[in-house]
Length: 227
Image (cartoon, rainbow, N blue to C red; front, top):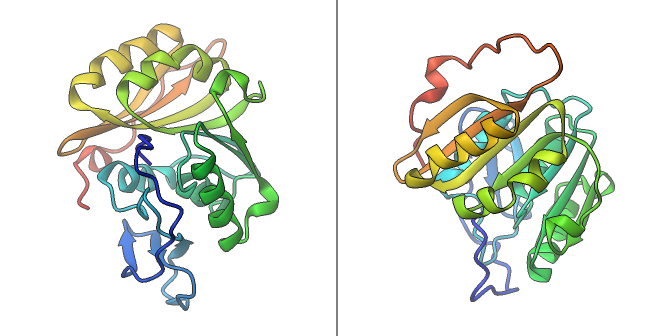
């Protein structure tokens, strides 16, 4: 979720209408019966962070399912509702660490992980990224503003395993070039650069020794997503 915490409310709402994202996910309030259509339900108690309707969240979810997640170690920076971490865990990731500066966001994330039955594989850290456990991750998620992706670039990159993927969104168009160049300079390759109506989404991969050229995802994934 986009992480500006002013006005956050701990009141949860269970009365929003379920909605689909791409061809893999359905976001539903607690207590919604399974549709049985093959989609993965993401059960989200809606608070001030919303329930995943934002174009950047939808874009991340659509691209998440294209990444190698089986057994992956995931870091979610600015986790908010933890919807991205929950989706990764439901797609086969082994573990996820959710990091957020807001205690209220961490509480929301814990609640949502429990609602989705993934709480045993999810950890939560309230504080700044530089104080979080310094582990290596196969996938780093960050749906945060472009200035934060730049400010945190060293901390984020240092936690990406060689060959690991980074999925970023939340950056307005004007930050896209600077974010791409910053992470390329650190040693990442851009796999996908998706321009949304107002924001953009990036998929990158941290290079490994003797890395071979990477194949960019199909052109169909580069088209703007609907919300």
